[in-house]
Image 1 (tube, rainbow, N blue to C red):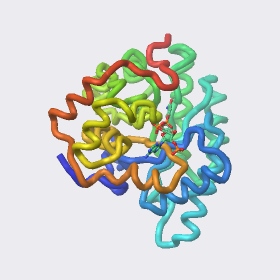
Image 2 (image 1 turned 180 degrees about the horizontal axis):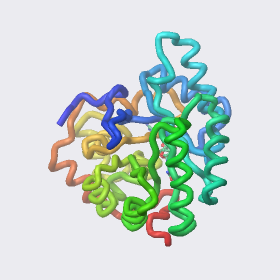
Image 3 (image 1 turned 45 degrees about the vertical axis):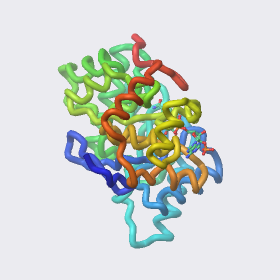
Length: 284
Ligand SMILES: NC(=O)c1ccc[n+]([C@@H]2O[C@H](COP(=O)([O-])OP(=O)(O)OC[C@H]3O[C@@H](n4cnc5c(N)ncnc54)[C@H](OP(=O)(O)O)[C@@H]3O)[C@@H](O)[C@H]2O)c1
């Protein structure tokens, strides 16, 4: 196990592409604060940005990325890993249009990771949406694709679909010690699907929990750093969100300590199936 996680650390997707282990999350990041959060993160060395059509900040993320690149000519677009997600599962044509719209909003030439944001709509609609994503990958609009909030049943169904060749490279789900999603995690690991942990800081709701307080003290880190480190040591891509430069910096400074296996287990035992936002993983 490495103690040296940093904003430069990557893991490898099943299609061979590298993906940064730490991304900046931008849910509820708006206006100039979103642009400056993206610029700050990239300046601090982050290389992954996690946006979505739903967040209505794709163009702000694009602005931030382009602003960073124009002021840092030594860096190139190819170094940055930009994710966005389909808002509504509206079928094949709708998804094709939504991808083109997201591409034009960000203005980045291509999307690194395109996700179905949720499994809503039923089996047939999910397949149609995924077929449009598959085509966008073939056309080069999207480099790689995955899903979000998919339960084991949804994943099985997509992998087994005879008319679909593309496998989801990632599944982005809510994941932290208070919601460990054991069944989905085990399935994804067995299938080589990289797991992305959203709301890795539990949206700040458990910073005062006695185990978090005790272990943060023990490892000389902040609660946010403990939670990011827990996700990384589990092999997850983590997506901490902040619009504040000092927190964006703090959330990625997780190299100076290593959580023991015993304490990793103590953290996992905090599981209470806490849902901080939504949980579509068992929808039809
Ligand atoms: N696929 C999905 O359905 C889905 C759902 C939810 C989230 N996500 C993705 O995952 C990302 C992260 O999840 P999230 O935004 O729900 O929550 P989160 O990252 O768990 O927590 C963000 C909250 O913690 C605060 N915070 C950040 N760093 C902190 C620090 N060091 N100390 C104290 N407070 C800190 C932030 O406030 P400030 O901004 O004021 O610092 C914000 O209120 C999202 O931004 C999004 O990209 C995806």
